[in-house]
Amino acid sequence: MNDPNTTSGSVAEGRPIRVLIAKPGLDGHDRGAKVVARALRDAGMEVVYTGIRQTPEMIAEAALQEDVQVVGLSILSGAHLGLFPRIVEELTQRKIDDVLLFAGGIIPAEDVSQVEALGFKGVFGPGTDTRDVIEFVRENAPRRV
Amino acid sequence: MDAQEIVDSLLAGDRRALARAITHVEADTMIGREILRQVYPRTGRAQTIGITGSAGTGKSTLVGAVAREERVRGRTVGIVAVDPSSPFSHGAILGDRIRMQELTSDPGVFLRSMASRGNLGGLSETATGVVDLMDVFGHDVVLIETVGAGQDEVEVATTAQTTVLVTNPAAGDEVQSMKAGLMEIAQIMVVNKADLAGADTAVAQLRALLAIANHDAWKPPVLSTVARANEGVAELVDSIDDHQEHTRSDTHGAQERERHVRGQIVALVRAGLHREVFEIDKVNSLLDELVLEVAARNQDPRSAAGELLEALPKLWATPEEM
Image (cartoon, rainbow over all chains, first blue to last red; front, side, top):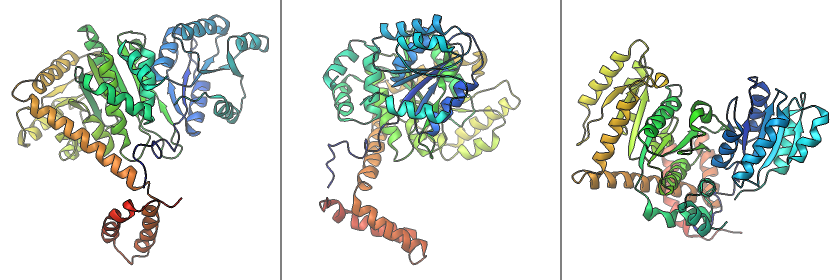
């Protein structure tokens, strides 16, 4: 007989990975963000999509309230070196130190090391195969419960 | 963090502890169950409001508008927004933050998106718990938004003290089909997008339906709103306040609370039974056998279900083979 006091069954299927996909800054082109969001959904993940023109504060608040394991940022405006540090700062202020960060969009090769130094584990440019993003998230997402 | 640490931080107003507690409750972990056990005696302070209706009726926009109106009245707001999981991948896109942009940077608002995660009626199980957490955290109002597509979602709406059913003008057929189901669980009806043609007719139809329905002390009002333009929203919140007062009144309060709690317990028992029964391997083997019999038309589904139910006490009592 099953012990009703164990969590087996209810948890056995595993909790889907929760991911926040956000677009910081002012560019309004979110096709890439949507493609990634759909690919992650189709890989069985729960994707919170915030829409465009998010402030660093909105992104950090969303990560906090939604308790996501992963935050993916899409940016095409070229403002990544201005915005990403502010987002990391907002996350740190909220003591969110256990999320996997990755970025996508237009991030010139010479900026990648700076972005990585901020704590971003993955930087995906145009032409990335969504399967690579899925694999990256699956392998690196921290466990929550 | 263990359950005690999470409860302490949650009660001290730590938003991150609230978020983590919800994660545990949503995953139905031991810690999650312990948290709910500990905080339950402190629940019951918040107004809990379910908002349901078909896809596209403007629920998210209306929830946003109601939340803003509650903020204008000086109340803090917790929002639980449920979106469907894909039945194929089990993944989900949770997009309610898009329609509630300006609320997401308001420290008086906490918005949590939830995926329905499909099966077993477990959604109402977890949603009830999440609402309890939002309540004990100290929110004055907790709004639960669900896709009113199926029984499970209807049940979620009933986890709230006040259920608001949202429909649109020119949904005449829909109004007809609602007679039996959703109409009976809603305490307030809203015709949203009332700037479209046919709004008056829709309101009149709903009022006519309600007039012939059998009701207790509370008569569900029918309101019209244009959530996008914030029209009729203050009236809706007034109406919600009226119903909340009704559920807390000396004359009807006890009865309302018992109705509400009974619904919660029954939903939890149903979900728990379903889960426990189909966790038993022998139940599943018998089910597989019966499926073959019924598929070959050697037996009818009703007899097959009867056979399984009859065998259940024995299968339940027998220890599982490892």
